[in-house]
Image (cartoon, rainbow, N blue to C red):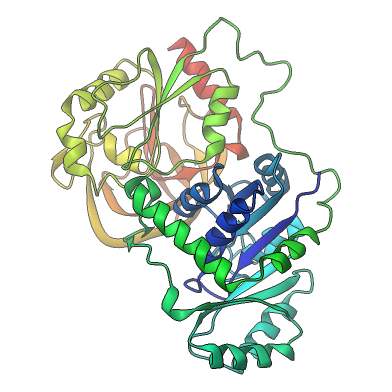
Length: 455
């Protein structure tokens, strides 16, 4: 299976990758192509804009969380039935997990996918020097094929001419030039862009503006031709599937258990593969909004509360007392509850003084400190999510703190940046700051659904 594909990278963060990648996705989709959107790394927010641009779920490709061996299979799973794929990179092209070489970098993903790279360069403060910059990136790793450059924040026609003349000598084609005055305004806050779910109408307009900017400034025919020049994926690559092994029968016993998954503006962080794995394990997955719904979905046997921004909506979440009580009652009954980051905060007694579910004897508050990075973790004891000793890789990304940081039965032992335990396991609850990607360990979804059947 070969899918035409491009990786949109940059020398550094803030160069305009999201604008270019999202604009390209929308522009190609407007031409009638089925476009598969992907994002390198653990980021949850950019894929929401990608989904708006393409009408398909935005999917992550993270070689740290899932392992390099799953990058091509996960890509093929997401790109099934598509005409073309666009992969937005992370940070600078060669930036990966700290202290791990190229692991989880955009460059590594491009190599694993054998995909040509389009380098988005912020040209706002340079002219001839752009050639040296591009030459360095194009020659640093001969296995990474930089197939073209898109110049961003170009000041004028004269500036563009100087940049193009300089790049003629670098031997890398200029595939687009975007004007400085036309940058699309997408608001940010303490953890990055504001998610689509919080500003849907404005986000639709922003994506349309990105597409218009790309159409005006880029050579779409040349970019599509570059995508089609991608070679076959590594031999033996087959699409990842959420389906369990053939000897399992998730449908045994009739209708599957209802697993309620938190959504809405406060809980926007979720990998598409998680709900696919839950459904493949036999669950009936139902989404609910803790800001608006006063009851859990009928027949809820288990609860998944992912990441998001409860700190922004603490007052509204607190005001929904009927749902807070329903969540607490479900947890007290011993039903399985899997909570990550925002979900952990929601289960605390309070967040910034606002009463929440009170499932955990802990309090949460906003801080001025960003906690960010990949983590190696091992399950300290048995839980509804993982058996003791289960090893998973995760990612932390928050500006909050929970006191205490771990319960009498912690969720994980974490190796980096320092050895520690964190999170809570009590009755059926598994709550932690750690974001994990279940495709790396599909057994956690099957275990969770099985506990929903039997609890």
